[in-house]
Length: 283
Image: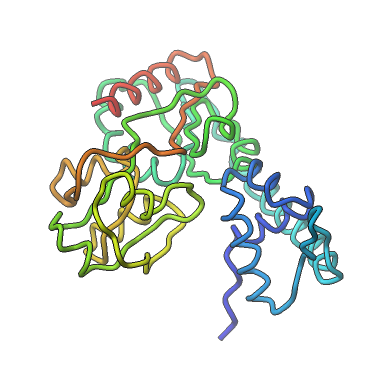
């Protein structure tokens, strides 16, 4: 059986860090935190069994192995971009609204509500594209963009969708879940279980046992009963309302990062979808 490839996000983080020779600059481009970029690059190095960077007091330099790998990664990423661009160029048409959204928002916020919007706007067609990395948004021009990040990362003309504080959720909502279930935490975000404990005054003694790359994945695991997740209230709103999840502890704590929507097209259909989504999440 062929050995599985390392995850694509690891290669993206390596390529961005190699271009900038800075984990901080790579984080700003990719839309993650600096520790998350560093963690993904270190995971790739461990997987490959080599050091890709020399970490110096004044910054990064590529090792011989890093210089050997970089052009191959660049070529592969460019090939994927070219391959998908051909499929995406032929779908334009009157009344078609392209929405590029964070995977978590696409799964847990837009998809469950989209039928109601289409019923209210029968002449509108919607093309929903899931995206994570900033360069994915650049390569896939969209009428409506919904990105995850901080105010500085999402660009101009974006408005924060809310409520988006951080809450602890599990299937039962039993306070004992904090001690008997694994803690689930999303990497690439600034706030942690330690912050939640400090701001709520609720003791959390265990360290997170499960790490995921998005709030949507954390919600999936919590709904399945795997553990208790620290997630955005915006992403968890649907399962909470439907009774599949229950919240533990008091009101949400502030979240350094959130979900931002930008309307990139003046077409009436795009404006209508943006106004509808703004009203939906405000409820």
